[in-house]
Image (cartoon, rainbow, N blue to C red; front, side, top):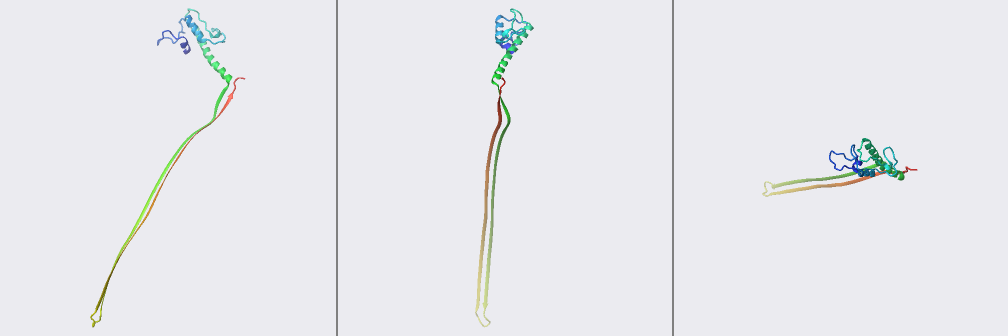
Length: 196
């Protein structure tokens, strides 16, 4: 029906009208019959049933189309559409068919991103302090008959300060990026001749 709608569209198409002039009880003019047979022409097509040679349809002049006329037209349309596919098939037979056969395939993608970091800090400190103070005093006198006296005194002070410090600082960091993509398709093409 799409073929007929393109070949013979109605003169004043509406939403309720038929999509084509080829409808029961419609009458085709001489120009309509010529345009229809021009669209249906298949050179070399044999006559069969209600269809004349070259796929032409015979419709009486000034006669309303009946259901048998419609069936003959639809058969001619089917022949015309099949002729296009038949011609394509004949060309394929002449050229042969080139097949693409995929035996196996692999599609792979991979992304690896790694980062790491480490910080270490250590500090040790020690302090030692010592103060020392000593006082010594000594006195001597003679015998009872003697009038001399002897005295001595001494002091001693010492201070010790010891500071020790130990520090350790370590910083480790790194990064690793790996990106990988691969597409592998193994295919085989062979030629298949269809005509001897």
